[in-house]
Image 1 (cartoon, one colour):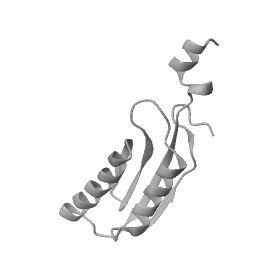
Image 2 (spheres, helix red, strand yellow; image 1 turned 135 degrees about the horizontal axis):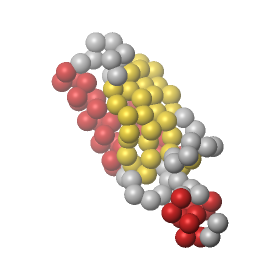
Image 3 (cartoon, one colour; image 1 turned 90 degrees about the vertical axis):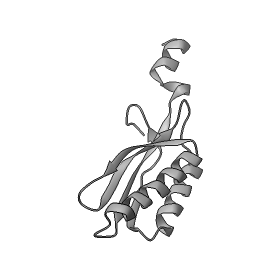
Image 4 (cartoon, one colour; image 1 turned 180 degrees about the vertical axis):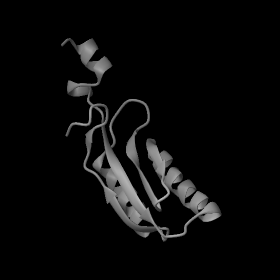
Length: 108
């Protein structure tokens, strides 16, 4: 596959990495409190030039994928920053941060 096609398909040296994020929230977190937590999460994500695709479910949990905005990959530092934020926020009772993996094709 030529370089132009590898870039277009985001494979080889153009592979982009992201990671999964899952957090259990304090039971009963709704309304203004939930909105405030989501605003804090978005602030951390956007400050690192990342994007979060996912959302909050009915089971007091958020679940999604974090990737770099535009071209590029999320990094181990990004994973650590999000893990530190989730560990320190009082709205979060548990969290999981997945390993870096191919953001387009789901491969490691």
